[in-house]
Image (cartoon, rainbow, N blue to C red; front, top):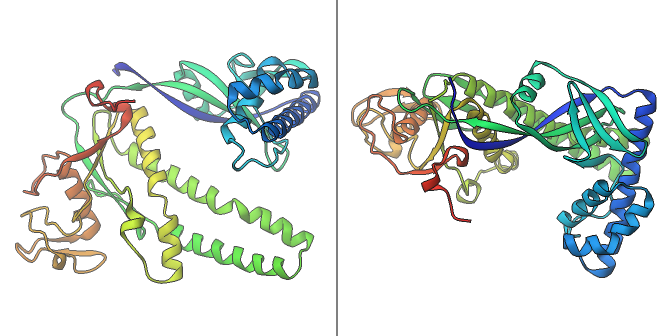
Length: 386
């Protein structure tokens, strides 16, 4: 039985809409009017040099209402412009529209939206994953209506979910070592290769460079379409791979377990790679994104996440504690020069991470201070001051 301690997590859930032709026309008109309102607010903000939300509200609210936007959609348009602060926003395309709790609500497996044609109830296409999260949700804070490149409509719902408190006592500590050759190695024995991600990213990088060189010599309709398809392909592929990896790691744990990871903050500034391809992959490797996915997925299952000092985790013997560069014989082999212990180097690093987080397994590895606990499971006494 899970208990709750009041921690609430906001999660975005993407659902496909199934509008009728009349509803689709209303959604299209709403998105276009919302984009026109954003662009008008952006022009006024730049003319007056005023991007503060409440000041901008006084300047453009009446204009947006006269354009046909409802009161809440006008407020959302002003908020969208104010968040950008004019530094990057140049023009808003009619591809999305933001809704709050007053303009969006759920009606079973349908969503009710305020549009230019009034209030519409549009069915959603849901799977078991979406139904499970909607059943757990304490409420819906709003959402963003988006139109995909193939004309499909989606609603990104912002759900508030209660985070279960990890049970105290009895849980195991599992260490996770992150790398490029192997994306994840757990002290429990699970190892996920990163070779597919590496080769795929190099292929897409070379393909984009080839198309870019052709576009520089002469732009054609086919090349422009190919460039648009390639623009987000790598990001989508990496996101899908990381979500799959994080889910596999969390599914291997039980509520009350502790997942220990390395605190790799500032890694790129401390390390360097030789070769153009190696530097490209090293600079783009998503350690932060994987850590974020692990933290929020683990929190939903009641698994505690801690970050430990990553120094010498792959050079320290988990049996006798001897630390030396010579212990790491190769990328894959660890052999202790003091006691002769031999094992896979990534598994050794994962085991040392687990021991530093408090594992009661074998070994006399010197304990290291826990640098960070996931904010969702940090006790009030450890919460940072705002």
